[in-house]
Image (cartoon, rainbow, N blue to C red; front, side, top):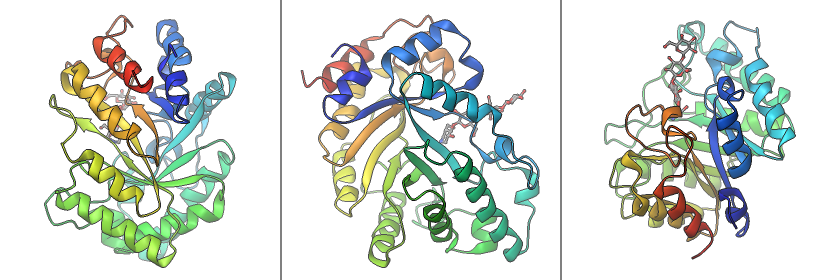
Length: 303
Ligand code: G3I
């Protein structure tokens, strides 16, 4: 196959990208998007600060523009993200009463998932809830501090009730190395959820890598999570300096894992990336394919 999406489809996987609604009118951008990618994650448009900037007042316009684009071009959608400590409006982070916050969180999940019901392949229900401090515990956030450890389970149970057809994912960064405490913390949570019947279908490994690419244990991590009975996905892949070997290796880790259903890169051109000046994506600032593009295409084609 001659495009990333078609090549991934050859093994029943998808190849996606983050999309910024404000760039859809850029024809260089949208031409590459519609040629190469068959899964879309909104880069910012489905986050709490955009969707519910004040309590009970919902703004789906920016997200809708991306969903409409995807529908018109045969692309599927990942929903990103329902419960996250970042890009969270001040009116939420200042809630101190547990009953209020529980109802606000569940209402946010219910309203957003209902609006997009039937249009989302997988939701990042909870994003980045684990700490980077080597303890394997949850990070401090209003949800953790006011609701306690159970907030993640509560979010997943609520989400399942709203759109039972959507896959429900936990998504995080720096959980690719099997030996890290953060990875172990997330693994133990998923294991516990599966053992107790808490609804979870998938784990997203963001995969924001330095120039060396994925850690050597990445395949082990993916296969160990998959063995718990969840799908796994690379959800926000980008690699500093985008060496072709590092990109091919990261994508191959997915291809080597039966339950790895797809790969999403976090933007199209280097100039679209949140990692300014790091040349971390598959297309240069002018939309030309980089060497890493070819190495990824070849990996997806099994050649
Ligand atoms: O929309 C405002 C605009 O009105 C304002 O004038 C401008 C001035 O700074 O800011 C604009 O908002 C920015 C927004 O992106 C939209 O461009 C924010 O400042 C900026 O912080 C925000 O960055 C996003 C970042 O998440 C915020 O946490 C990046 O685009 C986005 O790529 C990044 O994505 C995250 C994933 O969601 C989760 N995993 C990590 C990943 C990278 O940080």
